[in-house]
Length: 436
Image 1: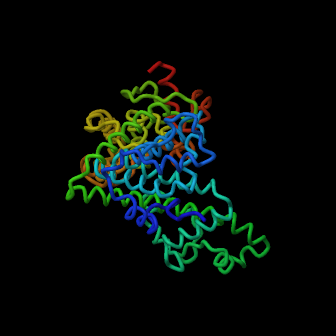
Image 2 (image 1 turned 90 degrees about the horizontal axis):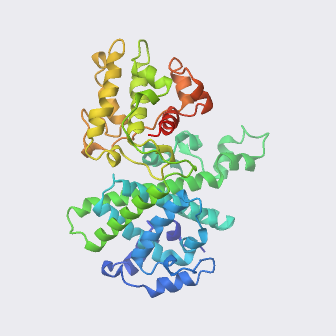
């Protein structure tokens, strides 16, 4: 039987483990023979190198983070080196390590940090990979158990998933709805949609639209959301309680591993990552150059706010966004926001002023919308205090430009060679060719 806390450490079972076995933070750097013996007993685990085996809770915390980055970015990743992370024997130790990791990051860096976002993504990725390794029958059983624990109502309203939807962890399009209820069970699916699919095979239609896939998606995203919420609650309490120095030490070690590994494995597509550098107008694609001239007709808002703002900000601060392992914020690349204020915003504002009529003359609120698209919420000015209230929008794809802003899309030979995927790829390609 699969322990619920193996998949969801935030369950009541997981909390009980911590109460019974994980209360002594002073011993997290001490050698743990029970942990070592458990890992050595796992037949699939590679033990050829002693460094592969975590010796204490601190090691296990770091190994969790190391696995996450290597699994996503290292083309030579070897699963046997981390096989213990996917064996139910590790449940007690892994659950305690999860809480140590969240507490360390919550205390030292807070919920809006790069480290916090990486840990939330790590937990979702680990949950997904653990489910994939289970037998089909075990997978279905544990999924239903966890779903029943996470959502106790007989019928799940879409509003119960509002936090997941608003944070973009799940899309409404992923769900099958009936009068506001999320349909997950086969019986409900047949009750509401049986007439529509009566000429089809019901089981196949259910598995196509819902099945275990949607149930797993919901629990993965809910665990991620609860992990994020827990880190936030730890951060709030840290202002009242003196933090344990050992947790601060672990937080620094986690941050160092993330920085080191992400730099090393920053490209999992086989392409070299592009470093941030001053914007070069000559290397911009035709659509961006046209947008910078100002819009003389309709669509000013969309071009300036939704198209130009993400392109210029990512081109300057994080051109390898589509190849990185974690989601960054503007301040991760521009800590004091000087680049954003002095280089990026002036270009956006100048383009807005070149519009006819000038965008801000009759719609000054669009300056706030620009800040929001950079991730700083609906505020008049850029402030680190507000960062994370909204999402830093990524550059629009070429398909969306063609569909929504056709007057901008005039492909040149480079666009055609690159198969017109995203204007940012054009800029990256040209900057590489120029040796920048």
